[in-house]
Amino acid sequence: MPIDSMSIARAIEHYRQVTSSYHARLIAVSKTHPAALVQEAYNLGQRVFGENKVQELVGKYEELPKDIEWHLIGHLQKNKVKYIAAFVAMIHSIDSLELLQEVNKQAAKVGRVIPCLLQVHIADEATKFGFDAQELEEIVKSGVLSQLAHVKVVGLMGMATFTDDKAKVAQEFASLKTLFENMKKSSKDGNVSMEELSMGMSGDYEIALEHGSTLIRIGTAIFGNR
Ligand SMILES: *Cc1c(COP(=O)(O)O)cnc(C)c1O
Image 1 (cartoon, rainbow, N blue to C red):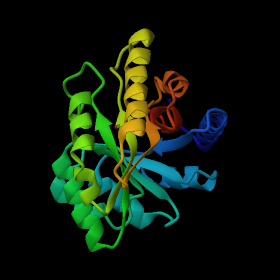
Image 2 (cartoon, rainbow, N blue to C red; image 1 turned 60 degrees about the horizontal axis):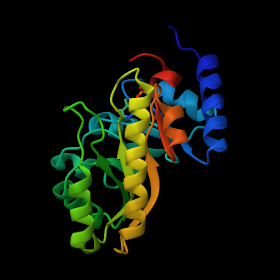
Image 3 (cartoon, rainbow, N blue to C red; image 1 turned 180 degrees about the horizontal axis):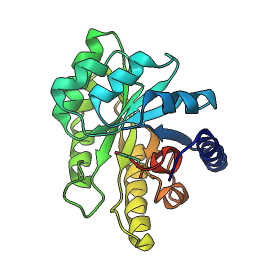
Image 4 (cartoon, helix red, strand yellow; image 1 turned 90 degrees about the horizontal axis):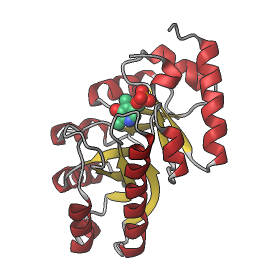
């Protein structure tokens, strides 16, 4: 399917309308696509973009307008945090306490507080990263987060199983929403504030929005196949 400016414009307009009716936000996932395509979306007013690889994120950050809000949505290795700490708007893929501690360290060096989401493993697939519900509860209860002054845990992120079974996807998103609400009630650390629930991609964003998503991450449906 050839992707042209018209189809990008139509897609962005569509997602802008659905997200606004749910009080959610659109993250345009530009991974593997050239900076020129990001620029087209930017010219249409889109300012929030998601990337899953550090090197690609840094390259696009350097090349593109500086008022873009860059979200790191893919698995992050600890030794690469230093390359993005100065500019990344949000990290969705915190999947270990050690990673969060490294983000805190690198954010301190550049004098920032970086908004982060804890990634939760909700899918069947063993390949998807993230905490399970019990690990999350333990971390929040332990009080360790309050020692990390340069990160702010602002919510949770999850990826549903890749399947046509809508009931299964709905059940996974519902379980993440429940966890989110429970943590909202129980977290007393000053730097934890459950505001964002990042769930939903091109194939399942409607189900995600119905289950309380505040950030949908849409790639293919805007920029075409990778
Ligand atoms: C690639 C990616 C997306 C976007 O997926 P599409 O199906 O292309 O919309 C969303 N979230 C994460 C974590 C991704 O890696």
